[in-house]
Amino acid sequence: MRSREVIRRGHMLPILLMVAFVLPGVGCGGDAIKNLTAAGKFDIAMETATGVMEELTIQAGYVVEDRRAGVIDQHEAERRYDALRSSQQALGGAAELARVAFESGDDPALLTTDLNAAIGAARAVIRREGR
Amino acid sequence: MSTTAIAIVADTLLGIAQIAANGYAAAKRAEANGGELTPEDRDAMAERRANATATMDQIGAELRALGDG
Image (cartoon, rainbow over all chains, first blue to last red; front, side, top):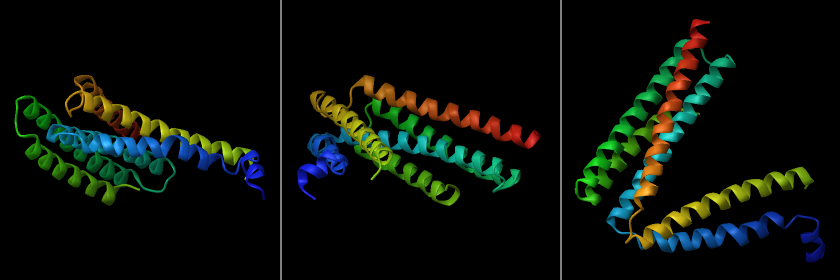
């Protein structure tokens, strides 16, 4: 199949989109991230914590879905939900404490380490209780 | 590949591109801000955390209602 025909028929569209939009964005973003200070790295940890908190919510949604579908009983659904919610509360508390400490001038490198530990604990709960 | 499949793949890739573009824009703003996120970007993150918690509570209420029913 000639390359022009491949493009015309749409087979190459995803690849072209990837080359046109995603790769330059990732490449330039990578350079920008390298230039971040310790405070910037703390920001990345906060962003990760935020994403994990959102993931915990998504997993709780799956629990309700599974309950509705009859895959798990009410007791199991509530146990899983409670584990996910507790983990989210712990991570949210850690993120909030880190934010206050950061704004008070604490060492962002140490705060990043603490926050990453809380993120690791939440991810373990997702692996254990999530889909 | 069918037109629908191409549309789905393209839509997914555009979504990824949008996320990459948003991340890139935030990283560039951080560069311009001396290597840190701007206060506005930090506030936006805090709002996302608050939303995640509020949605979690809603899901909990929905789940308890299933038990009551």
